[in-house]
Image (tube, rainbow, N blue to C red):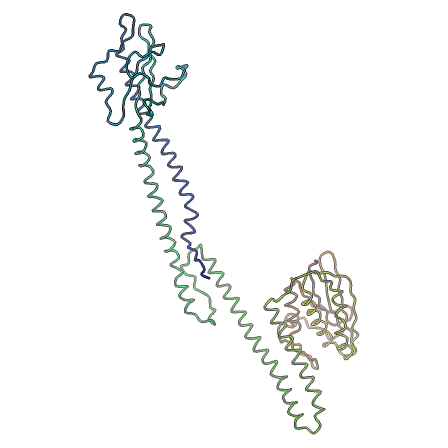
Length: 449
């Protein structure tokens, strides 16, 4: 499936174009209003001047109104390059005295109306100026009208003169945005080329010189990611190296015992050592697999888990080792519910209790407790062993690190697994001197569910 590439310039234009169009439309509206008003005022005054000129030629002859308009004056008043000019003189009764009969009449009462208005004459839209006048006690009205061609032409010219620069400005803005984006992003091309040249093992940080401020945080986070990846790969390498070393010793011992059994006339004495060595290798392999799964965050769906019930259900598996070492394994369990993965929480309990039993001398005591309060849930293991020195409290959670205690069989991964599981459940771990048994007390504190 082909992935559609997103253009930053196109994204910016998609956000800016509606604003540009809105500016263009509003500018066009303002320009049209200004142009229309300018044309209307200018040509309305000309119409009124014509009406005044016509009114000046009205006379009263034998008590009746007459228009005495010379042909020269009529030709001047009615000649126009674009529009047709009309006029009409009407008396108080609306009867035509002279001119083009049928021009639109003003609304009544006239004195309260604008002297300029629009109408239709001979099927054409016209603009009319109405001039009320009186001569020797005889009222009359002069109507001066014209078609709207030159008005529309003037409005179009003004509108075009105002909108063309705006359109050109928008086109220039689009061009400059595309050019600026490409120019700005050109500075990251060296980074791309550097990444192309790198091998999968080169996780050194990128040079952020000349990176634009807007995208600087992205590459800064990339560098942070490279640091974390480098640390993770280093940890993986150390882990693999330590695992290889830890596996090599029991496998070599197992091979030596097997070879001795083959050469011995009575191999039974070596078989018990072979079985014990196989168990150690199996335990180490299980611990390594557990750590690998934790690193890959292969967690199941969390649910509410009662730590007391989980501990009671799994207690039987710890009894054989406790009896083998004559350890008094006791439980002080109260309901303590947390939100978590029951499989991993059981693994946490297995490692803590197994660790306590292994490091407690023969005939000692190990006590497992859990309980809850308003603010937290505690699950802890206390033993009567030698305890853990304060300066070792942090190191014992490192992989393959073991206390310098002779006679203890272990691989140094149990507490590392405990820490990973605890952190994945947002729990904390504390090590104290046991108040009751005077040995070590390891407490895991959860937030209540």
